[in-house]
Length: 83
Image (cartoon, helix red, strand yellow):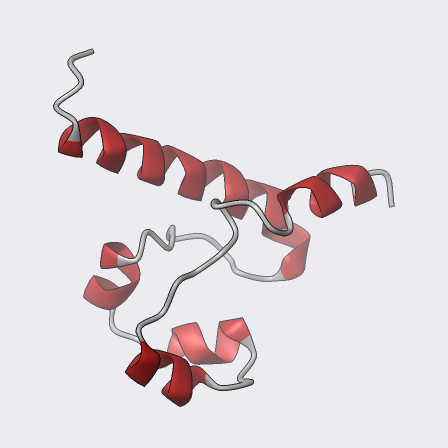
């Protein structure tokens, strides 16, 4: 696949990693991310900056791009960065 280098470069990036508190981590355990996210409410996904995109691997780069923008917007809000 022509995107292998991009996939590898984002695999351990902040845009891809999802930090869970211990209780949620136990609940998720080894569940597939798509299956797990389907069982979460929209507010939980929004608060964890999971973009509203198809979460199949074929959309990984779109997911990374949109999540990165959500994280940047949140950091700008926290640090009161003006446009």
